[in-house]
Length: 118
Image 1 (cartoon, helix red, strand yellow):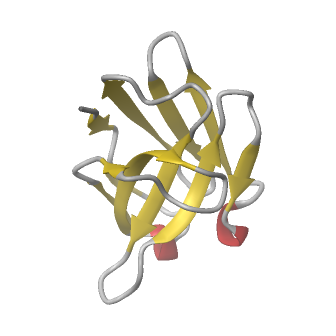
Image 2 (cartoon, rainbow, N blue to C red):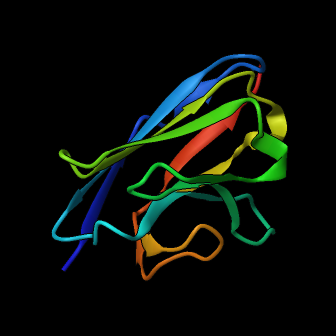
């Protein structure tokens, strides 16, 4: 059984930065993609950024050039560095493992709130 523990959310001003972490316990499969999705109130859950064990990445169009996803396979941990944040980035961010570069897997974290506001 896979469990995911997220950390790093909070309040940040527009233009600021935050770093999210997601530590996985249990086997997540070295060939699967891990990463982040987000869901704002009243909206669907969208892909933010995912990465494979080989380092291939996929980013949502709205975060390209500002967010960076990385992965430490030895620690079973995935990170999301968010820079130049915008108010529309306010959402609950969910860690996901076991998917592909375009589709989420079956394992989700509990979610961490990120609020971008002055």
